[in-house]
Image (cartoon, rainbow, N blue to C red; front, side, top):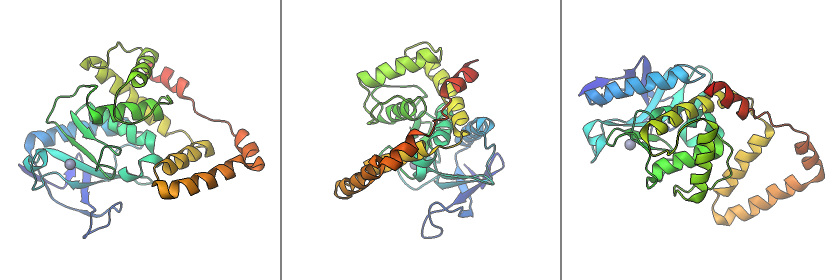
Length: 273
Ligand SMILES: [Zn+2]
């Protein structure tokens, strides 16, 4: 076991109540971590931030590594990542919807190193990524967390209109095949080498997309996703208000005049070479 307060020169902070509110930069703290797992973290963070367009961050806030509970945390072999702080930008995992491309770029590279990654849509993980190495890296259709990731990138990175429910079915399989073909990757996704290639290319494509200027159409998309997630009691009234706004003649002519600058195809061609 080692005690650390940085990884690869990135300061490790803690930002959870009662000390510091979630989402703030918190305060640098010592974390105990198992030696081999620390080496994994170093290799993984190295790769993530070598590809990330924002480069190496100053601070990562973690809700814990060695935590007094059963499972991998109890052994110092799991990491909970709350947020990442660069000079001019902060990624807070709970705000996934506002930086989907950057988030999914990071997750794609994390998944190359950690067999277990629990993300924003996995139950009880909206406000942090959990990752550990208790299982090997590969894709199983029956895995809820892996299928959630797959469906999230199919929808938010590759623009497929699919339902994100963590359950693989004909729609998920068909979209996966289409994307694999576009990326020139052999199928099936369940073969490890194919899956790793998919993670790598998706990470690069997501990071490239994260550099695009956000259009009002994308912001509207985010708003619609937020409304979809509201409790039924408030959802109806909010949807109706949003729809009346969107149906208004002036709004729709404004929206129709906006061109989507989504250059996904060009980005894919650039990445696959
Ligand atoms: Zn955890």
